[in-house]
Amino acid sequence: MVNIAEFTSRLKKVMEFHQLSASMFADKVGVQRSSISHILSGRNKPSLDFILKVTSEFKDVDMYWLLNGTGNFPKSENSIPTSTPSFSESNSEINRKRIQRIVVFYDDGTFGEYKR
Image (tube, rainbow, N blue to C red; front, side, top):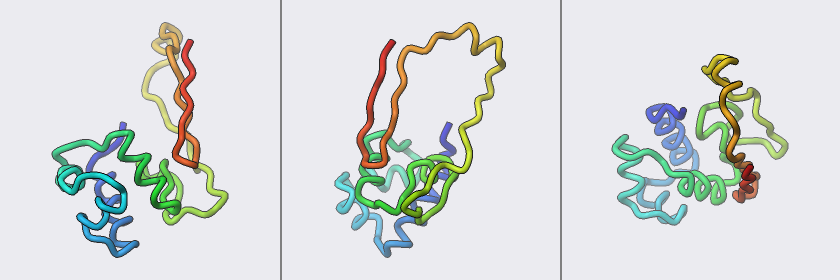
C-alpha cells in the first residue's frame, strides 16, 4: 500500500526539481489544479491515471520511486527496481487465493491487463 504522506513528499520533490508550482505542475500533467491541491493536502489519494500522467510527462520520474520510494529520482535510462514488493500475507493465505488478473505497467506509460 502507498504511504500517502511519503508519496506527497516525493511529489513535492518532483515539483521542486522541475521548479514548478502546484498549478504549473497540474497544467503540465493535464489535471485540474484542485486535484493537485487535494493530493498534496492528503485529502485525496492519487489515481492510477494521475500516476501514469506524471510518469508520462516527466520521464525522469520512476513509477516505483514515486509510489513506494524504491529506485532513484531522477531515474537513469536503464533503471530497474532495486527491490521487489513485499507481501504481508502468510503462505497459507496465498495458497487459498486465486489470481483473477495481472496488470503490467510499461515505462512508456501504457499497461497490459491479463485476466484468468
